[in-house]
Image 1 (cartoon, helix red, strand yellow):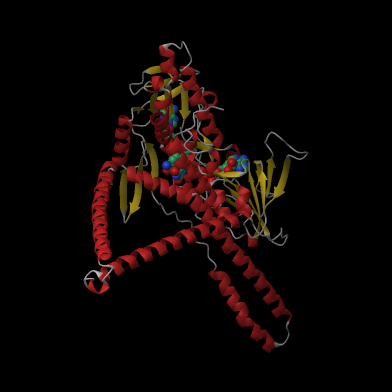
Image 2 (cartoon, protein in one colour):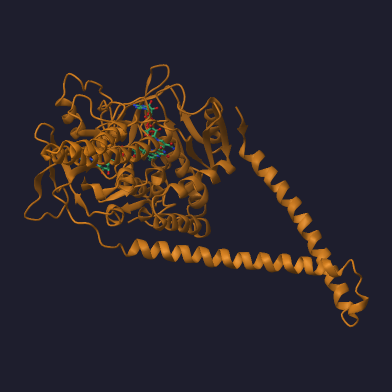
Length: 564
Ligand code: FAD
Ligand code: NAD
């Protein structure tokens, strides 16, 4: 296993850069002296030494080609950018609803559902997408929104932007699915928003249902968590956390505040040493270092970040070296990690901890961020209850290797965090499952078309009385039968692309699959890789532009301190 420390990578790249600088300046001097000789000898061209003349043309040609290539690249880049943005902004006409086609109802607009919609050939189906959020949320960058590095809009993609570009019109409904009736094949859903029309509750039928509703935050019923802690799951959670954090700081800055109270207000407790808790801790630390130190110099030094984890170590899904690297980076960043420590209660002004020696301590704090993991949503639990003998895994829905709901008749599929599989509940898994399901639907459509053709051929063959004509039709029927038999749906296979996490201080960690093993990498170079990986994973050019723009703005002007 190979392990790269950020500092090593940086110093090596600096060394390389200085080598480049040296050779570049040498080149500059060489070309200057050449120019001088050429100028001097301009009056008598026949005296130009033969060794210099070809050099001049070589450099000129090189720079001319370089300049031309640069111009072509810039013009091409602008052209592609304009073309893609114009295409995005002006969707063309779409096929209408077709009663002859089967209807797929997709529940959710997250990683699984959006990946499915993106890949699905809608010319073969009518598609209805139901979700309480009319957008896709790019969760990996949510902690960056919580501290204001990114603006909320940068990581949202309205579902209609995608739906309007599909071959057939997709019905997008902003509503929460309340009930699934798998026996009558219906879904009942409700508009849960502030403003409702005359109709806000209705039921529709499906031929196929894709259950991709994700999961909700697991609180284990610990007193005070639901009411008093901030979460990091939805966009609103990130906005709430940002407001509370700034509120803590402004309250600590209130004139006459007692010193103990300042320390309490400035103590931030993050619960959960999984990737969410680690990334939130890193982002809060960055906000503190990059901005608060400058604008609240009297308070910044007093801010304390504690990360509480019940298990013996943080980030159990990462390799040992990366765990140690994260722990040492947090130590340098003065983020205290409390392992083997369990949160027992969250109070208004404190958090109750069970320490490794089982003693109970009440620790004063201004804010608690809860990142304690996932649990199934009510709609998922209700669906499981319809198949009490099969759906017994409390972690989520059991599916077969083609992602069909176990126990159901093959018309219900489930993907992403709402399922319980051998894979971790990650965006990578959910999006690969969504794309896989789109291919399954394509195979099913192909099979249906061939079956319809076969039925037609068989019927017309049955109607023919002439034996020669009958025999003539047999080969086509046989070929169609073979084609149908060849349409096979392969099982879902997950291809792990690696695990990445941001740990603050412009450092990230990465466990990347390589050959039959793993490459573990950490540091500043990995942080740049983390950024470029997520920038390219964003679903639209619009989001890529917004995120890149926010990163630049934050670097130049810092984060916004205002609290709305
Ligand atoms: P989601 O993406 O959660 O989507 C569920 C959808 O269902 C949502 O649109 C929701 O509004 C909708 N919904 C909810 N209830 C209903 C209902 N009753 N009816 C209809 N629709 C409903 N994974 C990674 O691989 N890499 C990362 O870097 C990473 N970073 C993360 C950072 C954070 C802060 C968090 C919270 C998670 C992160 N994850 C990451 C995990 C990843 O976000 C999830 O695994 C992924 O979102 C799961 O996709 P999903 O489609 O199953 O669910
Ligand atoms: P998680 O389940 O990975 O971690 C939750 C942690 O909270 C656990 O380690 C658990 O021991 C701890 N915990 C629970 N109750 C506690 C208590 N009372 N006191 C102290 N500690 C407690 O949750 P997550 O970090 O939100 O991640 C959820 C999923 O999303 C995971 O599959 C993860 O891989 C994925 N994710 C991935 C990334 C990434 O790849 N960068 C980022 C975020 C999330």
